[in-house]
Length: 172
Image (cartoon, rainbow, N blue to C red):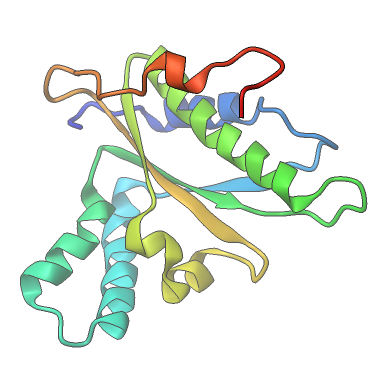
């Protein structure tokens, strides 16, 4: 991904569009953290601290690779799964809503002419990173990157539809 990426206003529109996601009970079990250009160095410092705490013998090239996600694209947002207490809505449905929100972020960016990527990786599961970004009950659903295509976009291999689609009654 290369510049230009979405402006602050366009990123806000992407996030607002993403919030129009299936959400049983209207719990909004997700939230976003945007990381603008002026915050990238601080985000990289957090990643470096976390990576070195988990990998004290890491070589400089490993550390550089681990924190590269802080500067991966012109625009960045972090999707946080923020489950809400509910007697009626199980956490599983809230996780699905968060995932749908992430997919809507990508669809919104693509509809605006940008490209996007959703990455988890080590930082999404690192306790130092999680505790710096999340409340105790929350988890990082992913790091989202937006920009313009730097190369021609090619389709990745997909499963054969015949292997994934069946008719009722389903063949198990």
